[in-house]
Length: 115
Image (tube, rainbow, N blue to C red; front, top):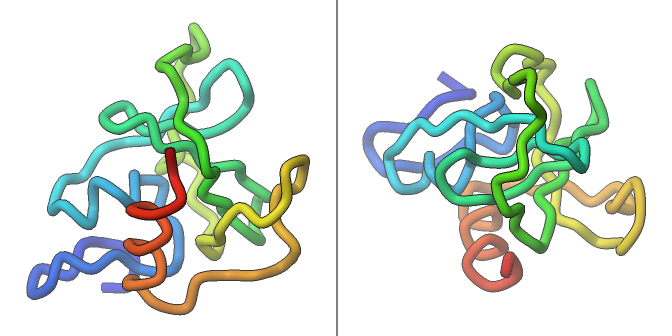
C-alpha cells in the first residue's frame, strides 16, 4: 500500500498520509496534530509539516515544541494525498515546487536538514 509503512524495509511513501514520516521510517505510526502555528506537528518527534491541501506536505526544517491547539485536529483526518516536499524557502509556502521522489530522499533530508 502506498500510504503506510512498507513492512520489508520500513520505507515511507512520498505521499503524506497524515502520520509522521520520521516515525514511519522507524516503524512507528505517530499522528500529526495541528499546532498553534498552523503546522501539523508529530506528537512523538516534533517534526512539522506545512500543508498546501491537495498539493504538497512540506517537511519544515525546524521542529515544533508541542504547543498544540486546544481542539485537536489530526493530519490523518484530512488526508488528501499531498506530495511530501522539502522546505526550500523561508516563508510561506516554504517550497518552490520540489517534491521528494523516494523514501531515501525523505530519510536523508530528515537526518541532515531538520533541526
